[in-house]
Length: 138
Image (tube, rainbow, N blue to C red):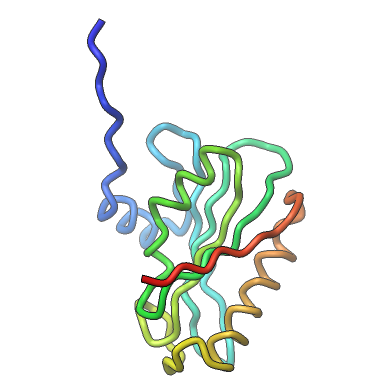
C-alpha cells in the first residue's frame, strides 16, 4: 500500500466559492465555512465562520489576525481547528481586505469593531460550549 500525503485545500478556489455562495463545505465534507460580514459604525467588517460540519456543541475561537490581516488570513487555520472540533470566527483588520474601517493599529476603533464581531459570533453560536480568543501578530 502506498501512502499519499494530504494536500492543503486550494485557497483561491475556496475563496472564490465562498464569495459566490456565501457558505461552502470543504471537499472532504468535514468543515462548513460561511461569510459573516457585519456592520460597525455603518462600515463593513469582513468575517468568516468555520465549524465542524456535524451537529453538537463546539468550543469556539475568535481569530484576530495581525495588523494587515484579513478575515481570509486564517482560512487554513480555521479549517484545521474545525476538523479537530472547534468553531471559529476570523475577522479582518480595519483598513485591510474588505474591512472598510480606517486603520488605527489595534486602537479603540479596531477593538470596538472586534468586540461587536465577538458579540455577533457569541450570540449566533447557541451550540458552542466556551468562547476563546486568539490574537496573532506577524
